[in-house]
Image (cartoon, rainbow, N blue to C red; front, side, top):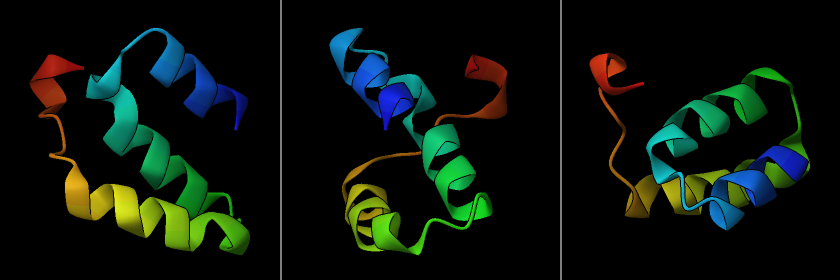
Length: 50
């Protein structure tokens, strides 16, 4: 969650999609509904913009 707070505090949303993928890969099922909601409202950044 610290990484998410850093994204929001720094207004660095271009990395949000990567954070969502990392949460899902880390196997944190308690955060799946949260990341699913974020995925529905965000646009993934292209690999070139990271």
